[in-house]
Length: 76
Image (cartoon, rainbow, N blue to C red; front, side, top):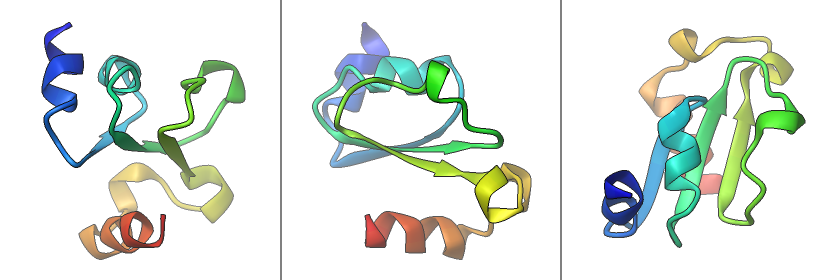
């Protein structure tokens, strides 16, 4: 509940595929979630999450530059 409450205090949230991303999905704010290998089965089902699937971009989370993350957030 604390993570969801804190996530509601921000303009948006950036996270990776983990339990925190699912807790943040209950906040009303936009969430940018970065997956190494996205599985539709485990993605949050709300409309406030924007998914970046690294496998579709032939990369991995640890290879993403801060510039690439900022570019994705600004475009979405």
